[in-house]
Amino acid sequence: MASDSVPFASLLKNIVDNRGKTCPIAESGIPLIATNCVKNELLYPSYESVRFVDEHTYATWFRGHPLPGDFLFVTKGSPGRVAVVPDPVDFCIAQDMVAIRADREKVYPLYLFALLRSREVQERIEQLHVGTMIPHFKKGDFDKLLLAVPDRRIQEFIGNCYFAFSSKIDLNRKINETLEAMARALFKSWFVDFDPVRAKAEGRDTGLPEFIAALFPDSFAESELGSIPTGWTVRQLGEVSSYLSRGISPSYIEDGGVLVLNQKCIRNGEVDTSKGRRHDSSKRSIDGRTLQFGDILVNSTGVGTLGRVAQFLQVNDEAIVDSHVTVVRTDGAELSEHFLGVTLGQRQAEIGALGEGSTGQTELSRYKLAEILVLVPSRPIIDQFDRLCAPLRQARITNGRESISLASLRDALLPKLLSGEIKIKPSQSVDSQQEEAANERSAKA
Image (cartoon, rainbow, N blue to C red; front, side, top):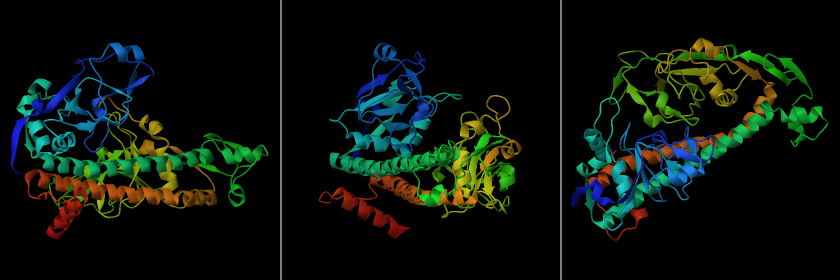
């Protein structure tokens, strides 16, 4: 693909750089996006562990604020991570990142975004950054990063193609968050707030179909967890689990082997297999450690990530976990794997607080995890909960699998489009060229 290489800085119309120090923080107000909120697997910044600033700080402390369509570019810690600024912009940005605005006369913005996300450019940024303990890629060094700028038509096709894939993946993620929120809301109503039981105890209508309402008792009894519906019990997690164990220390290889899931794979209640690595099972056996559908994964080391929970819902690849993750598998007698997964997912903060050790070395013992008390309702109620959630869960699984396929296809196509290995024909539409590129890739596989 014929193109000129120009300095990164020359393609930018504006850079918002807000001082290399922490701004005043407030208890509430406008979200302050930090570098941990910018991830190359997400189209837009996340709101993970955000802090806040008040209106006065927002108006007076910052040198500038990003506009819709700008890109957030991380300059310190993990330099090169980039995300799109959404419309509307409801946040401000912290130190160690900048907001960049493409000069539309010199480069198509979405092409620049795709190019910065490409493996080749990410590797070049890594080679250019300085610092050993905390890597950083200074704004003053942007001229050292040379970027290929091909014909405008090619830029538009590549940028639009990459953004279309990423937008669909982002939409699936948002849909899944909504589906998960629906299931959690039902769980909270039935098994945390005990709404149906309270309604029956007070002689009110439960709002549920009669055959479901009949499954709930109409009184409460005291337990180790406090007041719970009569007839329900409390058990330790270890008592209702058939398997509760940390993973192995893998022998990593680049290709082949068995998929190993780690802490990075567990985020926002989902398992991201793209963050996994591969284990050479000929070096260390994985007998009895292969994950089963519905297994619950709990992050068991670290700070900030400790206690994160997700359920393994993939069946297309054999997988295990490393030693930083604990696998919990229900025995199925009292609790279904879905019910237990939602139960632990609701209690992530509580689970994380059980960690012990010094800063940076905090660990969650599987023995402590096994002692967690869990509520055990009657099995007919659990089964009814699972039936109501089944369509939501299946939709989440379908969306998750589609997103994995789309990300794989997008990331395989991008370098081929950038290198010119896949030719772009002037007369074709974006959709038809995407289909042809996908077909070409499938034929070579």
